[in-house]
Each structure stands twice: as C-alpha cells, then as structure tokens.
Image 1 (cartoon, rainbow, N blue to C red):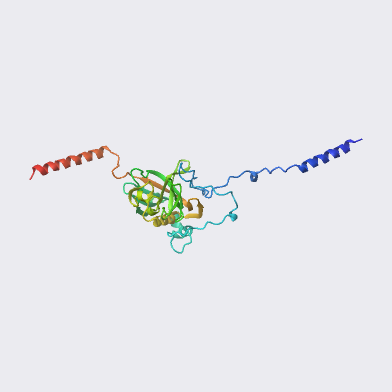
Image 2: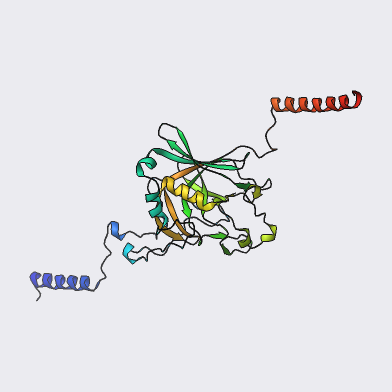
Length: 307
C-alpha cells in the first residue's frame, strides 16, 4: 500500500523528469528583442534623419548586412581621390587640419547660396552674430528651362567621394561611374520636424559628359541653363575642399552608390532668383517696358523725318 509520503516522492520525481525533458524558454529582457539590421550609414547625432528617396531614385541610406560587432567589419578603404591634396591620407584628416578649430567654431553654420539669375554659387560662413563671410564663389550650370533647378531651401549632410561614386541611369538601370567628376553631394528637402528626403536625384557635383551613357544628347557645359536640374561646378575639387575645410567630415563609410563622409555640420543650400527672361511681371516692369517701347518708336520717327 502506497503511503502519502511515498506518493509525494513519486509525484515529485515525475515532475522533475518532465521539466528535465522540456525545452528551455528564451530569456526575457532587452537582449532578447528581435533587432533590425542597421543601415550602413546611420544618421549621426544632431543631424536630421534621412528618409527613403522619392520613387524611382536610389536611397541614400542602403541597408547593410545583419548587424555584427564593429571588430568584425572590415575597414572601408578610401578611394584614390585625385582631388585630395598631397600628404593627406583621407578627407577627414584634411578637414581636421585645413582650418583651425577656433576659426571653424566661429561659424554658427555654413550656407551655400545659388543664384539662378547670375548662375553663381557662393559658400558663406555665418557667424554667431549673423555676420556673413564669403568663403568661395564660382560660376555654375543649372537645369535648363525644361527641367529647371528648383528654388527653395535644401540641406547637405553627406558628400560622396570620387572616383567610385556612381550615377544611377534611369533608362538602362545601370550604375555609371566617373560621371560625377570630383564629388556628388545630394540635396535634401527637410520639413519643420527635421525629417529629410532626397528631392528627386538633385545634387551638386562635377561633370564629365564623356562618361554619360548617351553623351550625344548632353550639353557638357558647366555654366548656364544646360543640365537636367542638378548644379554642375567647373572646379569640383576646389568646392569640395572648401566645404570640407569649413565644416569637417566624419569617418568614411560606404553604400551601393560609393564611399561617402557625413559632414560634421549640415550645410544649408538656398536656391534663389529667377532665370534670365523669366522674371515675373510687375506694374513697374510693365511701365518700364512700355516706356522703352515708346522711346524706341519715337526715335524711329525722328530718324525718318528729321535731318
């Protein structure tokens, strides 16, 4: 006859046996949460987040492989950039050495102003007292009248290196190297909450028309209303040097478009002015045009009747 004590021993033994054969439950806590592989170019603190590109354009932030520890990731080797001044190993070293920190810190921010009426680009350092210092000025090419460079306020927060930065051809869906001679800096459109996205594939860059897959339909100039909307600069190495000299850059990273650096400070871009001949009519301009027309006709009459 089984006593209560013996029955308790048997029951305890069976429970231990059942627990021993069961599978262990996963731990509960922050380390057990499922993680999403991070982007290769995580947004640095203090800068607006970059969202997905507009449809049809490649994203600036391309998701990388599953997350690994930093020691497992091979270092990104910078390309052999012909724009990099001699004796510097990369643009980060140049940016740290090119302008004393005291001078750089005197700027509250850096602004690029693009005037569509004169086809000029000016880099300005804006002081903490709102004073403006001109750092660099250059003529540029803008979009033609069928695809004009839009007026408005934009932002630069990363810059692609040369020569490995590629152009995404929308016709052949291929990556085209060497077109963006010198560098490519995508222009971002941001809202009041600091959320940013690429505006089409608009950017500032150098240009090598011979690298275009259809060069016969391209105007190669770097001045005037000739591009598909981007801002082409005649001396991309000089402009890239001035931007990096003014704000500095972070470590080199890479996505499917090529190697790039985050700027240490975002750069505001203001596109202003009207294309020549497209200025809006005002009462003053209408009166001036009418007066000029009357004067021209009177001059013609006087030339006929007066000796």
